[in-house]
Length: 182
Image: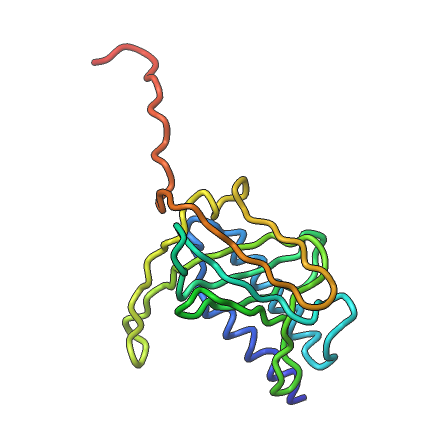
């Protein structure tokens, strides 16, 4: 029972992490579905299809990207893995939890990768939490520009060198109006 409660606590922690949901609602879906799988599998230890570790470094324009959430979601379905970059841009993924022990790694195979710095503010929280703006360029937060990574058995080092670009989506194209002007 305690293991299940730990899994549910982990689900709440992941749910509290706010990705750039206004721009990418699919991100929230993969994190929440991954958290449900993690909560269900939290007592079973490391399955055979989960790599021993996945870590790496995220840079933006050659500079470390601190405070970014990094999420791997298996393309073939399964549990998502999530990590956070430190001040030097380094991250390590956590696949789940077994009791009080965190299970590092990610599901083996091709994964869609989401990287985001956006954190929704919570002014009524105690202590209040300010909003953290998005720094990751918009092109990496769309389905067309989504990053991909292949996780292999054992230990993996997967770095992401992001190119600078606009953070906001481009404005809609100006269309021609039909009919006569009044």
